[in-house]
Length: 440
Length: 197
Image (cartoon, rainbow over all chains, first blue to last red; front, side, top):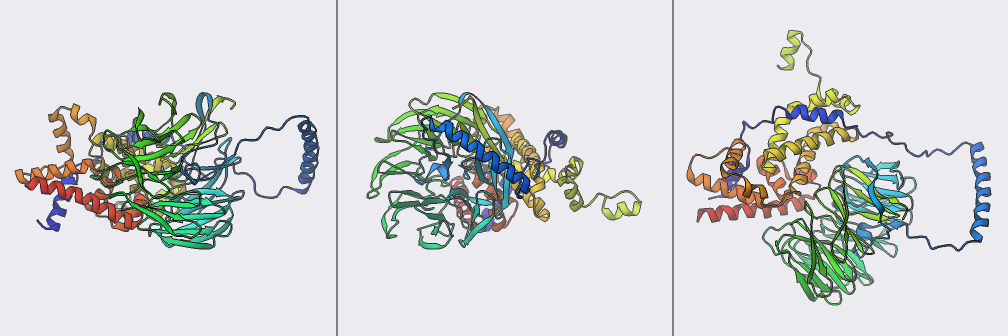
């Protein structure tokens, strides 16, 4: 049978009968739901003023500031100063090693939604919000990059940078950078949203951005990794990978680890740009790699139905295989998070697997109600897991015991755990802060 | 009633989609309802093709409609309303499928007669036995595909959308769409080969 006949058969088998209609009551149900749903509007949530205040107000502000500073100095001089916790989660999955380690602390006490605000488009699970100081920065499927107040969710600014934000944003040195469907890498001033530079990467920038030592790494669907000066957007160098970059690279100890569609993972020396080693891991796409303790972890066979789906551990020195893990269901796995004891793997079989990082032995399993495809976050002995069942779970890392779960509106992204909050974006375009009733 | 006939009869004609979009984007629920109603059947058929479940298709269309309403003020190119709405429905279907196991549990629990009846309502059954076997083989293979691959197959083979548009709907590059479509097609072709042996 020729291709045309097969096409015809497929079309016939999968096309609904022409008599199929929407149930008559569906329209009324939708209408009732619309009546209860506010539209998202610019300005519905107040935007911080950008105009310079009047001069008189400036003087008052200056005098009050001087007095307050003097008072605080007097008080502060009498007390030991604790080291403030880090207030930045500036990169996809917490940092260039992609382990999911977050500064925390997580929420304490009974858990609740602190605030939840809509953005202009859906936030897919591979686009993580980033946090710097008192701001949350998020990109969405409508091409908008936004800054929100981390305490209240109040909108500070929003800027359209393309038709869709496709590379998870990155914060560094006062800039917020994101990639677009059109292949633009755009850097905005984090305080004001003013564009600082843009770089034309030539094809869709779909890999999450990474940065190290003042250099930004952006991967494209043409298989190019660009190294850009993060302050100016100037191209420093580039390399051609063995296939399309569908997921971002990991960086550790002067090396870039990049996996491509087709199953090859390579280690590249950032100083010499030399490919140090490459490993072929089978057909399909590779999961975002994570690097920890001399090992690079990835998962194989993604988007390839009949390929082996393994989580593999490779020596960073030479790419040799240390161990591999297959879920009992043989369903696809993802490298959700890594600490010095365990690798946490989400799966399309709805489970989270905790695997001994040294031996590849399964330690515990936790079942959710949906695909665990978005990556997880780690703070001390808690792993925060987002699931397609629209819950965020907090689990004990040692035992997998559930500490809490909370429902959010839509499928959540990687949780950003900082300052007593868990911040997620969702597939329904919400940015949500999960808090505890006690101060961290 | 066509616009021409309505005009001739002196009855008020339905406002244009452009006018309705303008009003809907300013918060007019009735205008949005007028936009949505003539599109519901098409959206429902697309959703049922992807999810292969009337209940899931219903949820997907409802979720998508509410999301579209909420985000409509942010739609910059109103000329692309239909493509934008289809994108939201496709993503709603994918979201629902991501909460279901590949071979849905309920299929093993349902009475086979009920299941067949539910499927027959939505999908035409070929008359001859050979075609029936091939049709069922394709449908079973289709249900093993991941949510994105199912959406790709439906958008390409059933909806006839060009690859560039599919790439925009799924937020993927054209190259990846081609590659994943080819993989998904291989799965269906293999199922057909096995059936014909």
